[in-house]
Amino acid sequence: MEPIEVRALRKRYRTTVAVDGLSFTVRAGEVTGFVGPNGAGKSTTMRLILGLDTPDEGTALVGGRPYRSLRTPLTQVGAVLDASALHPGRKARDHLLWMAHSNGIPKGRVSEVLDLVGLASAARRRTGGFSLGMRQRLGIAAALLGDPPVLLFDEPVNGLDPDGIVWIRDMMRALAAEGRAVLVSSHLMSELEGTADHLIAVGRGRLIADTSVAALLAAASKDRVEVTTAQRADATAVLANAGATVTVAGPTAVVVEGLPGDRTSQLLSEARIPFSEMRRHRASLEEAYMDLTRGAIEFVPGEQR
Image (cartoon, rainbow, N blue to C red; front, side):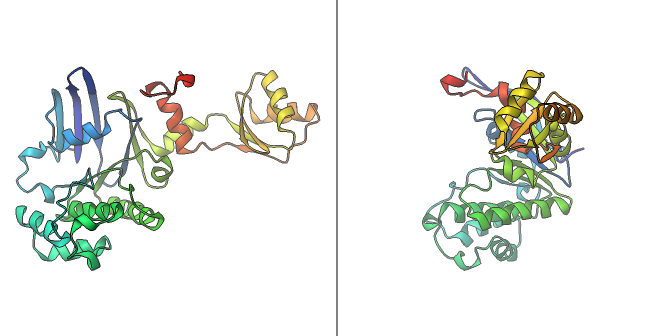
């Protein structure tokens, strides 16, 4: 039994299929990135897991049970879906006290989580005056309130300053290291690259990939080599004529795909094109993501269609 199990999940809103036969699991002890283009069905899936919407078909279980059947859900799963969903006239501490009372959580835990997210000094301020970053931190405090083994975060870095982004990234890693399951939806691949162990990629409501970050990066890197040369245009012409796919990687660098490194070196030497460095290209998570989702983007500028 996995902390989160999604099986053949399907959800339609009138004529739009938001989630289409989606299946995946989220394991304990890992940060699982949940990625996909806008409109891919990520937020809908999270709402289905949390019982905020009802699936047309399939199941979404937390700890082997539907969320709605949990007697004290905050002690089983914590979630941040919408940081703005706060009563503006309620003080931060009172907001958390109400949540704690509803789930049988001791009052002392409220002070602990406020301190943990850096809001201890703002505990008696009304949330209507909070910045987006402060509301995001309060949402995270609420998610941690019941010390749950399962956590869901939808775009958790929204509104956070650079220090806050580093803090939430480190916190997610620490939570996973404690053996918790962390599912984080994000469109910032640069943040997930240093955080996620595993990726669930979706497009148009369907599963595109369910893989470790390491395996995805290895596959995206393929047999590419990166060449540093002051004669970039000449190098591109020679290598392209030999059947390689060549892309610009900087003012003096190109990425070569489709030729072994020794053949690339030979061709450049024969053409008397000097190069100062040649190394295997390691794809970024953003590159891997773009390759993965290229055919699943719903909204594309006209010239790219």
